[in-house]
Length: 108
Image (cartoon, rainbow, N blue to C red; front, side):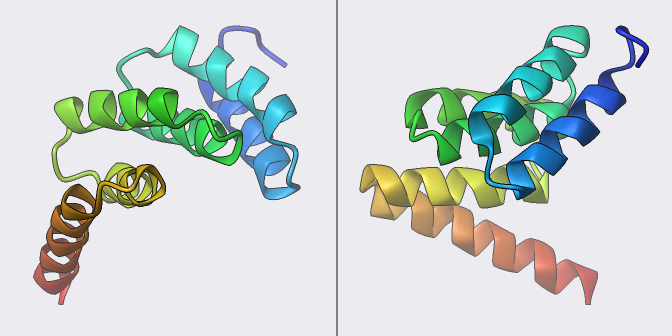
């Protein structure tokens, strides 16, 4: 694997996450983010791993960073909504859910 190809790390990390191996996934997803620190796609992948590991503050930070880059990035909004719910911040989770609904309605 090319050590400078962030997408390869992301893909392997995503596969490991789907296999319920979030610790292993985090290593690869973190590598992708190190190579491309301002990529919403990679940041959200790492946020998903942090969420699975119950590192909610880190997951939230990655989601917020991804949303600063693209404030309508569906995956980051979806993950952030889950994080807010897990943190008990129901109003913030509800606001993200409403924005997700708006984005889905625009696609129709």
